[in-house]
Image 1: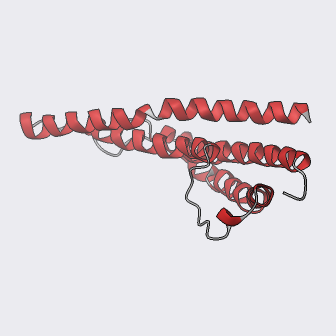
Image 2: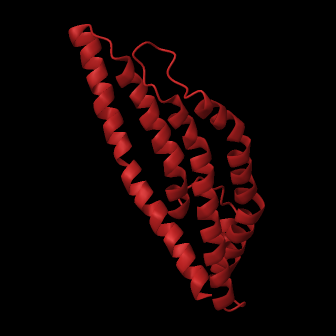
Image 3: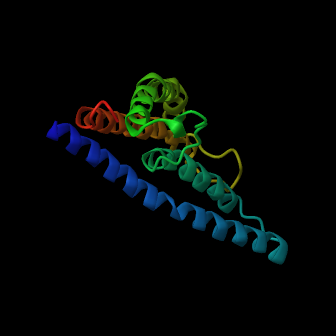
Length: 172
């Protein structure tokens, strides 16, 4: 069981580090947006690449921030019944929920986006706007990256849930 706990902790540390890193995207988005507005209305200058960079930062923030959010258990949850469950029942719900819902959705995202992303990479897709960011293929790569990171975080949660269920007495 020690190997699995170590594996789960490695996933958790990785997603936690990604979450801390990508959190700075929100600050960067605010600074770039402010700069775009000042350039546009103060100096009557356009900045297509800067405008697109806000989109890229937004995509990175939400796509790469999904797994750290799951790790922190901060996803939206309708817990009308859940909040009244014992710790053991909550662990069962979370573990089974990840097996039945999170894992299949992640696989659908990863494999469903494969053609979309690989086509973008094959043509090295660029922005359709003159002066735009020539890396749309990187932006699209965030889709399977999100699915993969969420998948790994769900695996970690399942491992931790199974460990907890094996340690917690059944009468809890």
